[in-house]
Length: 434
Image (cartoon, rainbow, N blue to C red; front, side, top):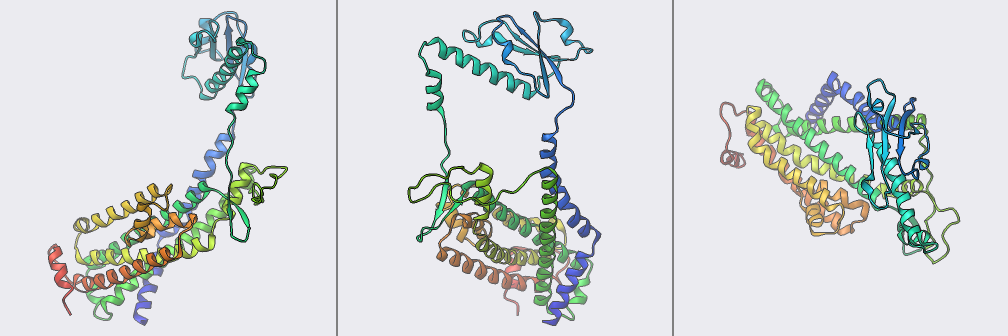
């Protein structure tokens, strides 16, 4: 046991002291925060220059509908002119209306010497479509028809509420649950793939440098393999914790600078007993914040750690066995590719199960040990029966222990095998060696 701890300490300290680890651990949260915050910040910045848009309205009915804003100034003009399109002109675009739009929508066109800005096109389209709609309704001669149609076409969203048998209610959101589940799923997938491959790479490097021959003379191969797996797992945990803390701090600081505040959790949108809705309905931001706060965090956190450990142990043992069996990076592809495809299948199964978390694909994929760490995390925010969680965990850790035992057998022989590519038949023979 002491020797295993020494290997764990060596793997951990060696990797966390590397400059690449330090730089990646520190810079990644800044990069992620920048990817989230910078687009939001840039979207709030408006150009200080107010562009001129000429309105050539030959009908005289539509020009007055356009209102100046911070981006555009609308100037009526009796006729179109070639000077509007010269390089020296300060005219951004020309809205040319040639006739009644209720009779022919093609009577309007926007001309510019370059591509028309999307916000200008959207504004002009909305303004003219609204006026055309009003004109067509007025032509029917029915009083109040526009209000009737507007009322008929109005939409509403259905709030969702979690309610217990005791009558306690809390706001919920299907979208928030989907995002939270897939986020945990992706973290497990990323970690297992990245650090499992790191285990294989480390074993191959030590085998290629013939360091293994010295190490196995003083430590059992199983202790060496488990020391590497656990040591690299701790490296991953350290990196994820630092990423989470730094990212939370950065987003909080950036959110304060941009004036983004987190809303407090409101009460349920409506009394489940049939009472009246609250006097001031919560905003969408309030409802989303409440749904986030009402997620089963303790269950998600505990299950995340359990599936994280089980999935990593399962795949890392396999990667360690592969790394000990081959001599070159190219030789490992024939063994690694099927496992990578299974993990990709698990990721796609999670994506397709996110809208039907109780369907056959979600159910069987969350029980199958090779995909359960990925798929089960999608289901947990929606509620999973306890017996399914327990069965999935038993199958996962049972398979992980089996793969660890098989991997240790292969690892014990493979680390001292040089000179030729191992076949699957030879690796099966290694399992019978004592």
